[in-house]
Image 1 (cartoon, rainbow, N blue to C red):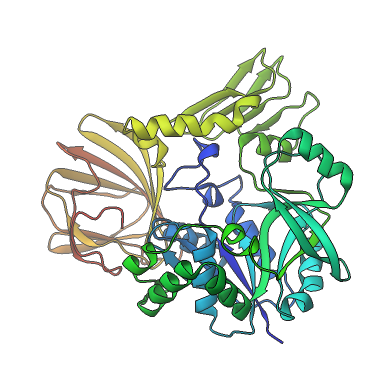
Image 2 (image 1 turned 180 degrees about the vertical axis):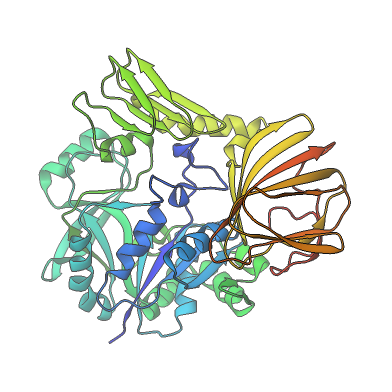
Length: 475
């Protein structure tokens, strides 16, 4: 029968994990420490399946460089499908099914932002569910609940389909606490994990039957797709015509083919800072501390210091999350309300809800270290063999200082190599280009000065990523 193709769905925005997670830098790509990301963990889980093929990644157009950077660190490549805008999981999975081509192949849908405690339990569950999915069912994986959680949906098991696999009796939306306690006591309910296993043919047929508008829009978008290296871009307008809906609402709550495979493992969708507290390793006073934290008379707190020291005194049951440009302080009981701050930032037109200080590009990344009137300082990292576009700026000049690696610098009519501690000056209005010809990352400090320092002050004359022209800084 068909082989398994893992599909990593990267559409989450993680607004409840602000300020670490931003609209342009969602939680699945955030460095959780020592270079670990939730997307990377999901990728590693997918590759542990015994007969899995190369994964397919579905992500937002704006996040493609985070995916590419993560795969580059692992020395891996795969097919990356780009959504021009998020339309939830049902259209995203439809694109993956259309990309898979083989109708008997099995798709294993894995959200990129979940934590799974016992990976072997997941692998065993997938292999146990495989014959049920090959028989034409859509298997969702239910987590055996350990508490009456109200933040998850629930699945009730019905008649047995095979060893450890059941027909779905019903789905339950996020319940009130009293209902959650009743379901936990009853023993035949599971948390809805949002992970699925089904054949390409089954999913596309059921989607066409129960959500024909989504099926038609995605099929049209796939027909009009274009290829751009590792990226596949569905036709934008056709894809945007698709309704936004989840696999659960579009298919699972209507199909007669829904099955559930219970998994006994620690699991979390890590949807709030409270979830990170519960997942973290606590000290003898119940504190979960990451980074440079000094705590005096502090109990049951979550402290995450990303760039600066956090000093806390006399606190209980609090959240403190520090990033380069924002600090969150709140009672743990208000963890779900962080999204209200994000809404206020958006309404005020502030960029902190959307933009993260570190930004990824096709050639690497940059991070703003300091910003003031008429100046900006950035740390730029260029991956080996990569180069920036040939460009100029109308309103700013730049100084480049090499920290490590080798830089090939085009400055007007001259091209030279610069190494550690060497520098160059790029006058306003002069065409210039930066390339890393070496085999290690190039790190340099860029000091900008001028009347306007916006990312749209750029004119590209040649670019390996098809970004010629004026402006278009986000691409």
